[in-house]
Every structure is written in C-alpha cells, then in structure tokens.
Amino acid sequence: MSAVNLAIETGGIAFRNPILTASGTFGYGREFEGLTDLRALGGLVTKGISPKPRFGNATPRICETASGMLNSIGLENVGVEGFERDKLPYLRECGTRVLVNFFGATFDEYVDCGARLDALDGVDGLEMNVSCPNIKAGGIEFGTDPRVLRDLVRACRAAIRKPLWIKLTPNTSDIVALAVACAEGGADGLSIINTITGMAIDARTRRPKIATIFGGLSGPAIKPIALRMVYQVRRAGVSLPISGIGGIQDATDAIEFFLAGASTVQVGTQSFVDPDASGRIVRDLEARLAADGIHDVRELVGALVVK
Ligand code: SIN
Image (cartoon, rainbow, N blue to C red; front, side, top):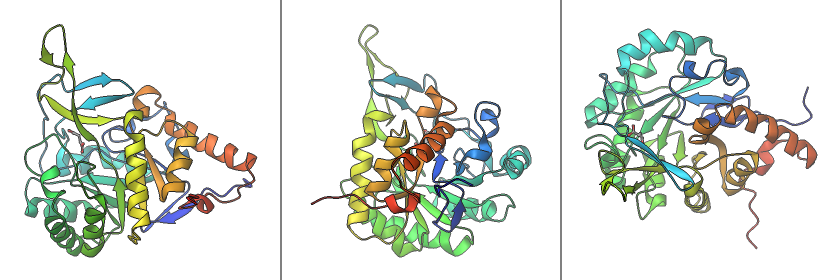
C-alpha cells in the first residue's frame, strides 16, 4: 500500500484520488481507452448531455491561442437516449467514477434531463452546465443571475437524488454570489471554472478564426483566473466542496488548486496535448507528496498561507 493517501470523499462521492477529467475534453471516456488507464483516475466527467442529440455549431469551431485554445463546439452530444444506449455500458465497466455533465435549453429541460440521467445505473453524480458561452439558450444564460441560478438548482435538486455539482462560469463579476446561489439551491459541489469568452482573428484573411466569432478560452492562460475564483469562493466561506478547473498541466498545478481550496481538480485542455495527462498527474502527485513527507492529500485542501 502507498504511504500517501490520495483518496478523498467530497461532493457526495468517494474518489480513489482527486484527479478527474473535465467535461468536453475527454469524450465519453472510451475515446481514451489505450491512451490512459481510466482505472487509475479519480473520475471522469462526460461531454455535456442534453435531452435530445445536438450537432453543435458550424466549423471551424476550435483554434489554438497563446497558452491555450478557443472552442465553440456548441455542445454537440448524443442526447440522453443515445448516451444510455451507446455510451453508458462502457462507462459502467470503466473502473472510475463517472459524473455526467448535463444541460437543457429551458428550465424544464434541465430538470427533465437531470432526472433521466439520475435514474441511470452507472452514473455516480451529475454536473450541471450553466456556463457554456457558445449557445444562445441553456448555456450561460441560466448561470449568471444568482436568483435564476438558485431557482434552477433548487428545481433540479428536487428531481435528482445523486450528488449534484454545478459548473460555474467565470464570465461574471461576482463568482461568490453564484456559488452562494448554488448552496442555497441545495447543490452538493461546485466546478470552478468553465471557459472565458474570447476571440481570435486571422490577420491574413481578416476573418475570425472560429465560425461563431466568439468562443471559450481554456488552457494554461486561464489558470490564474481559475485559482483566484476558487480561492474567492473558499475565502467567502461557501460550504460546498470545489472541483478546480483551468489550465492544469501537471501535479504542481493541481497542488496549487488544492491550496486555494479545491478538493478535486479536473484536467481539461492538457488532455488534447497529452492524452495521458491526468494519469501522469496522479502518478506525479503521489511521488511529489511522498517526497515532501505529506501523507494525505486532504492536508493540502485550503492550506494556502496568506500571512
Ligand atoms: C461547447 O460545447 O461549446 C463548450 C461547452 C462548455 O463550454 O460548456
């Protein structure tokens, strides 16, 4: 047995370690079979699922930027039925915790989608997406007004028995108000942060690099903003556990998020650079803690020294 404990129970779920993969960067899990050992991960978060399948936005819908990338996928996904029929059988056997990211175009669709996914065996928890910047309805529009968000979380909470995490947008002037709204609505956890709205221009063609003009910026470029928001929510005393997301490339980045107050982290854009990034971070985290004489990863959560 390892001398270092990486296991953590948080947000209503017991994880073997705190390294998860972020929604939209890890497909439905199977895409990474043979590229990383899913059984070594703490968990994975699926692509966002809506009640019906979606084809997503026009292309091009992804481009590289300095220290990051922009995406405007438009929440392409197979829908609840397709997910249950084609994706879940593999996920039931994949050997790691499965959180299903979900969304709807209306209030009622959110509730309906969450309730249907909640009923499925093999789903350990749900992550509600109220933070996609790339679609007109059901993305960020429900996630920026604290009262609307509180009511939506409350309605979904009433329909969902499994752990319910809410993925927040950084495209706000008050992340704490959104976090408080989720706590009031009865959420079990927060995922902080989704992408930051940006754009990229091709100077030669004089055109935007992605078809929708604006997209969501992710990758190392956004890590300082993500750390700041995780820390702000923790410092404000919001009681919900936080899953930190934003530019995590290695074990040191993960540790920084733990210190800021996250109890798990989600690896996103780095999985496109290195499909084994999350597995490597698990291995390096264990080695790093052992070398530093830290016996339990939970010691790091919120342990930032500010004086
Ligand atoms: C997308 O599919 O456009 C991105 C999803 C998200 O940012 O939540």
